[in-house]
Image (tube, rainbow, N blue to C red; front, side, top):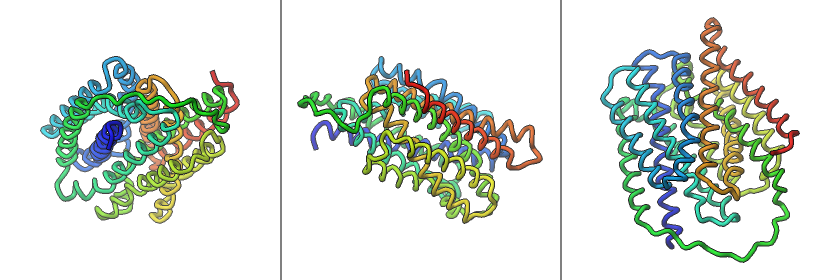
Length: 389
């Protein structure tokens, strides 16, 4: 294994650990709030909106600061903040305290994802960036799905304290890996002969338009994702599922997203094809509504398959178009993550407000967020016709 491969392997390991730890904590924090403090779907959606707002506000600036301070310095700061929030949350017994700790963990996380996205494409030639982005997506999606699946059995067996001490132990391992990465010298910059023009690569204006399209679609995908995650405790309670089946119901869409990432990594035919993006968006809207509204478990599980494929293509598009031959990659990664945070805030906020003013309709939040997703579809069509700037 050469120096470049060793550095990348360390980066992917840190990334996979980050995904498992953060998903275990943030997903099952809503279960803790539901089971220990009696939070309703409306209250959990409000918490999700708060955390999404903090992430959107901080990620962009964190990406820019990482560009100035150095990637590894930013990572260490992020892990320090995350550890502080997790260790404090382990000691507290109030809902307010747990939410404050979650805000601290969120702020720390802002310094991790933009940096990790930049590190995996650092010193890569443009023709190797798609390969690196593919491995990055598969890595975080695999550990993300594993955390979704294992979280419910883990909390049943070890109690909700495990959503603090397992991620805290993971952060400690990440710090050690980061210090190891810091000691490795930077690989020499590879010089290649000029590649012949890629006939399939679009003109700069068209490429910019697709970057804008994906950056619009991805926050709406996260509107759906974070709304779903915030009410999963209610979904599993509705069907009276055992811990194992609850794990399946919470994670099926994550495993399907992983499979979609593998397929999209191996098949580049979707690159710069609007029909794929628009089909994925329509599948997102329909499957989201079915998962939250239809009272049939089999139908919900089938809808999760379409949901996983849709969010897989939308997310992959956003990151690929952001990283494809871009400079200042941690800043681009910060913009990508800030857009995710905006979606994480807006969807749950709309759901919570809808449940507040239409409390008699249990599906009011789901219908309101579905309407918001449809508005995003209109924006997608409008942006497609608008010249890129």
